[in-house]
View 1 (cartoon, helix red, strand yellow):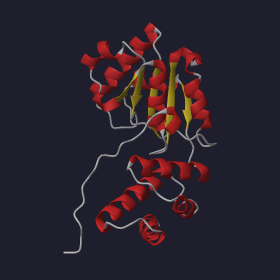
View 2 (cartoon, one colour; view 1 turned 120 degrees about the vertical axis):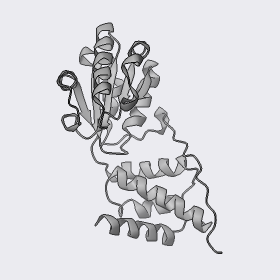
View 3 (cartoon, one colour; view 1 turned 90 degrees about the vertical axis):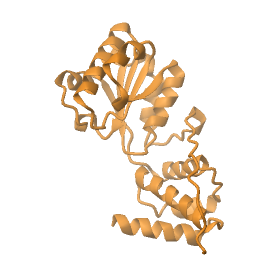
View 4 (cartoon, one colour; view 1 turned 60 degrees about the vertical axis):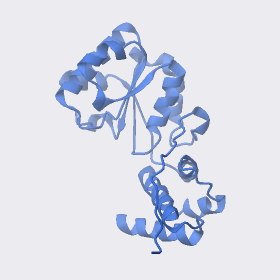
Length: 226
C-alpha cells in the first residue's frame, strides 16, 4: 500500500498586525482601521473578496479597541445586552441570515451607536449585495462609511501565500513562491485553495515540496476553473 495516512492538523492562523501585508490592494482598508476614532457615527463597513484578509483586519481592529469579532449568524436577541458592552465587529454579513438574526443585529447596532461604542460590519462583496431583508437594518448599513479590499496585486498574492503556508507550518522555499506568483489566478480564493491542495499533496506523498509537485497541483486547479 503506497498511499500514506494523512492527518488533519489544525491551521494556526496568525491575526496580528505584524502578520498583515499592506499593498495597494488593501492600503485604504488598513487606513480605515487605523482611523477608527474618526468614523462617522462610530460605524463602518469593510468588504472584499473571499480570503482577502477582511477577518484578519477585523481582529487587528478589535485588538486596538479591546473589542470582539462575532460571526453574524451566531447573533441572537438574548445576546444583545452582553455584546453591547464592548466594540464589536460583526463578521460574515454576506451570509444568509435569518429574520431573527437580522432583527438582533439591528438592535445591537442601535444600542452600540446610542452608547457611542464603535461598530464594524465585515462581509464578502459589496454591502448592497448582501442578502438582507430587514429594511431598517439595510438602511442603517447603507448609512455607514464603506471601504472595499480590491483583488490582489502580485506582491500581495506572494505575501498571502507565504502567510498561508506558515499558518500550516510549512516552510516553502522563496523560489517556489516566485514560481507560483505570476502563474496563479489573481484571486485570494484561488491562492487559498492552492495552498490547501499543496499541503494535502505533501502530506499524502510524504515528500518534499518541489517545483514539479506544485506545478502539477497548480495545473490541476487552473484546469478546474477554466
